[in-house]
Image 1 (tube, rainbow, N blue to C red):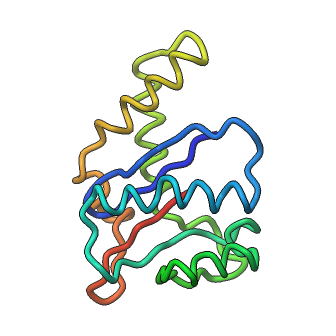
Image 2: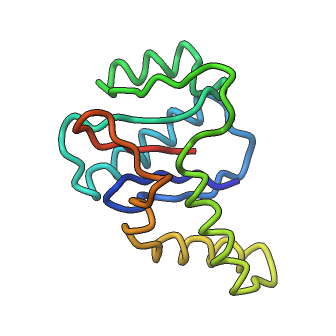
Length: 142
C-alpha cells in the first residue's frame, strides 16, 4: 500500500507501507511524513488537514494526537462516499505507472516514487483536487 499527501502547492511525500496500517502506525506516518511535507511545501500557518473517516483516522488516540499537534482538521461527513481529493492523484499516478510497465515489485515501487515526484503542482490544483475553506490551504492524505 502507498501513503501520500498533497496540497495546492504540489505533492508531498509518498511512502510504501509494507504491513497493515493501524492507528499507531498512521500517527507515526503523519509525524514522519506529513509534517516534513508541509515544511517542504512551505505551507503557511493555518492550513487545514483533510482525511476521511477511516477508523484509524477517527480513533480517539489519533484525534488527541492531531489536537496536541495543533492541526486544524476538516470535518468529514459520516457515511459519505469517498470524496477525498487525493483520489485524483492516485488515478494520475496509476496512469503514469501503467505507461512505464513495471516488470516486478521493486520496479513498481521505484516507478511509483519517481512518477509521484514528477506530478506537477498544477495537477493538484485542478477542479477536483483543490479545496479551499475560506482562505485556508488544504493538505490531504490517504
